[in-house]
Image (cartoon, rainbow, N blue to C red):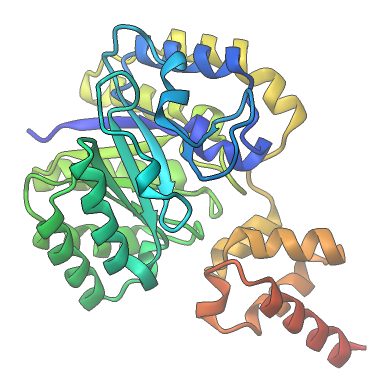
Length: 338
């Protein structure tokens, strides 16, 4: 039977909501509780070349992460690098004291260069996890090419990412089946969803079913209360409860709920994420949520006008942050309307 693992990314994806400022006590408390709740993998933030700020989950050295980790680690600890945002020369060799793995996120346009970069991560001694941003934009041919490149690198895992929160079940099935067929069987498949269409949890459940049917080891991303950019992610408290009920797992749901009570209540009172009609339009039109936020904040645009503006932008330009394209489309729409 294939193995199912949960990767909690509260501290990494949640950083989009609060600019990475959780506070040292919250960072440490969430990490400790998630490990004690039997979460297999915990993503603790980002590695960036920027200067380190106290209380932040943006780090510029792996040794900055070490004080937040339990002395006796039983979970796998990861930190994310966005390709092009971190000088690999600043990555210290793995010594077992800090994170165990690096998760590298990259776009379709630079996946070949990113995979060359990823080889350097492995040479440093870390487990390598790959994150394919906007996986839905890959054609079948491109997914096969991606698989072949991954087989050369042999990461621990590669994750499907629903960047625009626009996947339906058949989209996930297409991508999973192509990757499962072409990837080395020793490479785990992961899934990172966004809840723009209110399908995040349902798609995660579907992903678990696909992995079990295929006999492939899988990793499902989640976050406490779904904390993440835009509509957020699959909720850790929901997916762990589901796996406990349906697959006899032993996640400590009471401890997970205690973690929400102690550490997430203040965050939820001060920051907002989750579904609304604007975010739903982003999912419907395969649009990056940052473009929606830009138009809302700058122009106080209505839902109906937002849909019209986004529809006028070429599909490829919607999928990435392209504020110039958004501004041009908005100006053209307003001039034509009025």
